[in-house]
Length: 514
Picture (cartoon, rainbow, N blue to C red):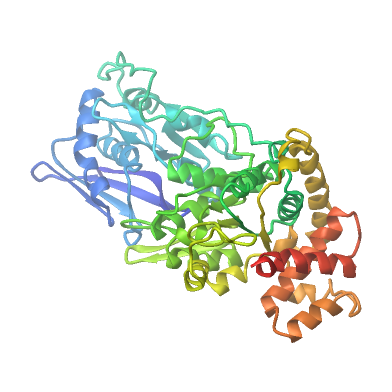
């Protein structure tokens, strides 16, 4: 029976599904048919495969070749199936020996070279989890694929060398062909730029304190103030205060960047929290994710376990901002399209920066402001109440005074602040580990009113704010989370009334200033 069988992986979001590739050689006229819901790029593989096999010295059979990708109901997309289909066809023609449970993931060039593909890290993770540890990839993908624990990865540069190792006749193969070392498809490893230092920020003691609290508890942050007050400088320094990612977080972040095809170090996992700063003209698909076919991750998912900074937040489309409400609560983005549904992790820290009005001069006495009151209200109303209710810290950032500006370099640096943040994170982890949590921002209301409930005298001012309608129930819980973070920074076991008052002030500072 002229039937060959290999394996590959289909990615839907970050989830990989094993695909069995069958190839059959019939007796009819020459043809090449691919079955199993292939997309356009996979249908084009027929010509790539024939040319690659011919130029490698092992041309495919001139009879009818039928390739079937199982399960047939699962959509297949991308060029990563090229190698698996080729090896199945060669096996069907008895040109190579059986490949067993080896998984093949690579694109083929017309000259027979193996080219790298996006998403190799989540694909190999799926192979290992499904019990298929032996994986063959393009050599340009080998370092990244080898990051997966338990994976037995082999990288090849050409189809001829791969076929030789699987028993093809060496007399037929074009083994003398060696592609250039400089592969245009391979993104070189780039050294990560050093994080900006907190010492560069002059003055702004209250804002610096708010940034430290946000970093310690993974809280969301809104900075409102005039142009030039330092809102962007502060936001850019937040990633430097965050601790390195844990192993499972690092693997997840690296997998997202691999799927997006972003330049990243290919010999190690991404250890530093990512920082995404999209332009205010970005669409919903760019921020949330989407695109034709199965949706791809957007900036919110690329910022997973890091910071998503939206500068000039009121300039974004309101529907784009409101679309962030789901991941702010759940830490996940589920995108539905006609071609399918994809789920991406999106547990990021949201940092919003906004001017007080369209002209930006409404702070202080606002004597130079040319905006009418209704223009100011409409401007700030672009950030909806339900979105702002999910932002823990809302702070007014005023202009730097001349006295503060003259003391440049005298401020505390990032290293000292990051040390306090790390100590506070460790306290949170010790307290929350029994509940499967690691930061105060993840603590649920049930837990805050259950095992972590504070005594009534401590929360009296907070209870009063809730009764007067100053706070919503969600805002009540977020103030409690802030209070726990303030206690962790102060090396206290429990928040006291002073911590509750500070937390309430951090949440309402922007509203009071307005």
